[in-house]
Image 1: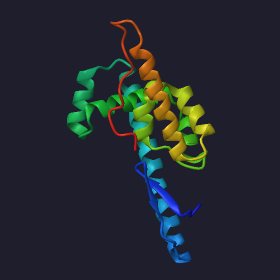
Image 2: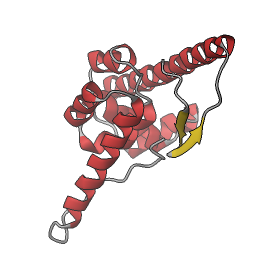
Image 3: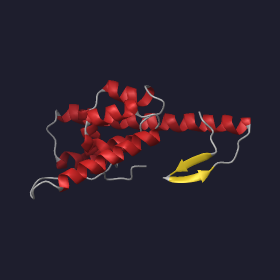
Image 4: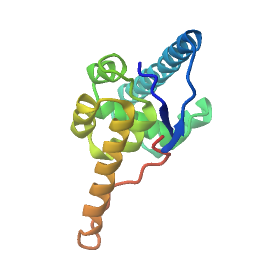
Length: 167
């Protein structure tokens, strides 16, 4: 872990104060715990999508999502994205996102960039040095793909917009 003098939070560069060895250890422990949350959320949302896909054998619609939503409290759009993620990615992909790199991938990034497709997301993850580079590259690719659709003839469907902040 690099404890440089500058840290970027929400695209804002902030000067970092120096840390004692004890504070560095605390930061490492907090980071590990936060990464555990990130991994658990990704794996859980992926498994929910798999369960819905398997239960309905890919024959579900908005009414199915509404029923599940009412009884679980999970937004219908989120349920849909969980199912789409489970169709697009494999168990091995999710394991790689969680344990195969220098950083875990947050579910919100899979959800936001799903329109780019599995291969783009996977290749970006493998080549990114850190989460900031991963997200930045996907943002650029997503923006580029939206612009190319804007130049299509009228009546052509444009890629869907991410429904939450990229983070």
